[in-house]
Image (tube, rainbow, N blue to C red; front, side, top):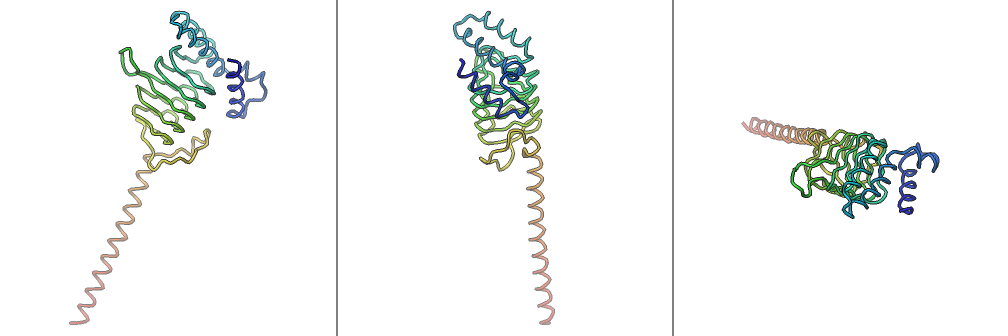
Length: 224
C-alpha cells in the first residue's frame, strides 16, 4: 500500500506543475485522497463487507467530492486532477497511468447486475466533464475531449471528441501531450478538410478536361 502511495505522489509531481512539495500533495490533493480511500473500500468490498465498503466510499465522496464505487477496479498511478464531480461506477475498470479531469462520468446503461460500466485502458486521458457510458472499451493511449459523450468503443491511440463523440480520422500512435487539449483533432473539421481537398482535386480534373476539349476543338477548327 505504501509503495502505491509513493507512486501516486510521484506521478502527481510528473503530471501537475502546480505541485510543489510532498506535504502539499499529501494534504491538499482530493484526487489522491479519493484514490486512497477507494483502495481501502475496495479491499473491504472484495471481502463482501458491502455496507462497510459503501460507507467508506460515502465518506470519501463527502470529503473529496469524488464518487468512486468500491466495486470499481482501478490500476496504478491514477491521477484525478481537480476532481470535483467525478463519478466512477461499480463495474468500471481503469488501467494504469490514467488521467481524469473534473466532472468525468463513467456511467452504466443497464439495470441488470452485469458488466455495465466502461473499461478504460492504460495511459488514457479523460477531459473535463467527459461522459463515457456503458460496457464499452476506451483503448490504451486514447484521448477523450472535454465535454464529449462516448457511447461506443474508442480504439487504442485514437481521439474521441464531440456530442456524440466521433473518432478523429487518421488517428495514429503519435502521442498528444496530456494537457494540450487545444491540439486534439476535430473529426468534423477533418471531414470538412477531406471534402474540400476532394473538391479541389475534382475542379483541377474538370479544368484539365475543359482545356483538353478546347485544344481539340481548336485543332479541328485549324484543319477545316
